[in-house]
Image (tube, rainbow, N blue to C red):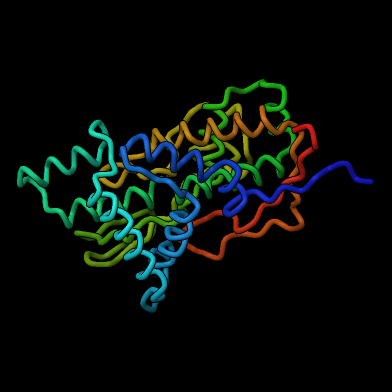
Length: 280
């Protein structure tokens, strides 16, 4: 009899086992907002995600409905003051009370933080698991603790960025990039995933290398468009990878049953089953 057990992780499963509870717990601590049921909130944000996908038509009605439900979640907690006085939400409430910010903007920003603060983190963990399975010699470095978790997280985030396409940029004037001319008024969609594999910046960029010296990747954007939560995300991924290797040593990906998320804007896993030993 096979002594291994199959534990379904990633997106729903990893979220249940690791990524969602960790990311929502951290959001709860930062915002100071009660999140009693992270699974229900995750269901909402996953439905909301389709509104951000690259498409020609309007987003599905279910996406708008989910956004409304998430807004109602925030409004309900504000109404019964289910937030700590030392959290970010309390600070936002003070700004509204003192007339420096509108309540509508405050609620919209809390909804955004609940969405952006964990949706891509869950994807990043799934991508990391798949990448480590694809490069067993790199996975072995973590098995024997030859690389620290933060260094590994930085490379895994470069190799498996959760967002491959940035928002469209509109050229303010004619720009020449190599032999290509972008005329004023034309839109350009930066491909972050491609930039992260640029061999001119990352030697052998299509290969995962956990010993790679730190370089500035495009995973979190740059300049005015940089992700404000990038440092928190790096810590989260490092902590989750450490937890996976210390609490579930010997894990194996069931690659035959792993499936990519059906999205262009969000690069992650829909399912990524793992085999865990009974002692893990």
